[in-house]
Image 1 (cartoon, one colour):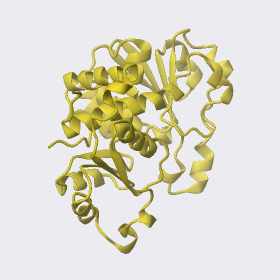
Image 2 (cartoon, helix red, strand yellow):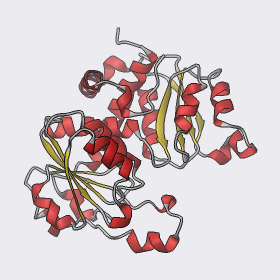
Image 3 (tube, helix red, strand yellow):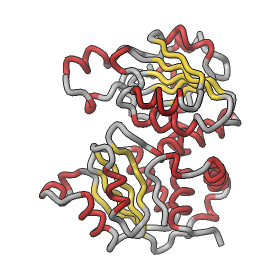
Image 4 (tube, helix red, strand yellow):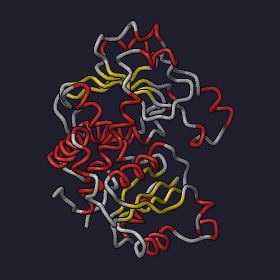
Length: 306
């Protein structure tokens, strides 16, 4: 039995296999319509979510399986004080696989340590978000044709952004990856990512504060929102929330084939005028998220296409 708590839980070769399966699902969805018949996915969401929860549920339904679970901690026994460990032990009696999102870092690992079914980390605090990372990798490979020799700009909340942390961890395993880290001083990448991931792997990167300066050199621009729920001070959030706004004028500075990505939801950081630009890939990411989560559920449940 395997879990996915971090994108590093799978080797590069296994990631390639997952993405190959996802691409095949995109082309031949009918082949996969019943591979998880009578299997149940439990979605344990202690924190609000639209894309991740519905994407996982859609993935399981597309595979012919069923879904149970809860969409907030208030709708579960967590409101009565039940621990994550006890919840997953109980859920293991009902379901074949579980996905958990929790505001506390390490909660998914605690669940995995106490589970008798595979556990998918659907986001734990500001730590990791591996299924979003799988989505991002598939989007990049499908739309850019490669996962190596790319200059990737990460913009916005690099301090609390778990999607950014997971993506950096995953991309450093591919050759020729360079990062441009675009953020205000208050939201810079955490030192443990800088030292233990970037520096430790001898990855080329630069840290800048002005988005326009970075635009011409990027193959990919990964925008993130400034997350109100991660701030202790409302004043600090309001001061920083609109610090970066990608609009048509800034897009004119970019390469003709630069890919714009965003884990969503967006607030103000990408103007709606960018949606019409052919380089905007963030809504395509949503669809790729279903395909890769279908492939992941199949792998963790060890089911194959007949």
